[in-house]
Length: 178
Image (tube, rainbow, N blue to C red; front, side):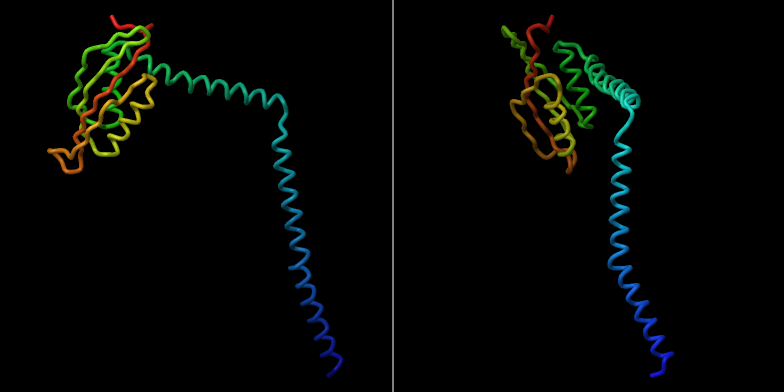
């Protein structure tokens, strides 16, 4: 072998060794250093000045007040009476896209600490919408106890259900009906 071949061979070996060291050691350390730098930047972003934190707190309290006021104003639409309970249930049926075929109030039971308003409902809708309606009843701020629920395939359409529902709504005695 000639000296120039040895020189080229040694240069190639040095180049390969340099590439190996760069890929295995240096780039890995640089990646770790970049990760540490990004973590420090995130920590610095988290450290805000007190004035900005106070301003953001005020904004969040305003948003919270708006969000808490919305359900109260929506619930205030209904009277605390038998007709208010009927209106509320009718509204829940509309919101759930369930057809309310029949709603019949029964004899009101006035007790010492509350008033019970029994109702009989006949509904029509698909399974998911009926489930949504029952969920709305359960989540309503008005205490409602479902006494019976009878579901059968609809005689009008194949995918719909006919539902008979007996329930009792309760109002505290302080809201006694006229």
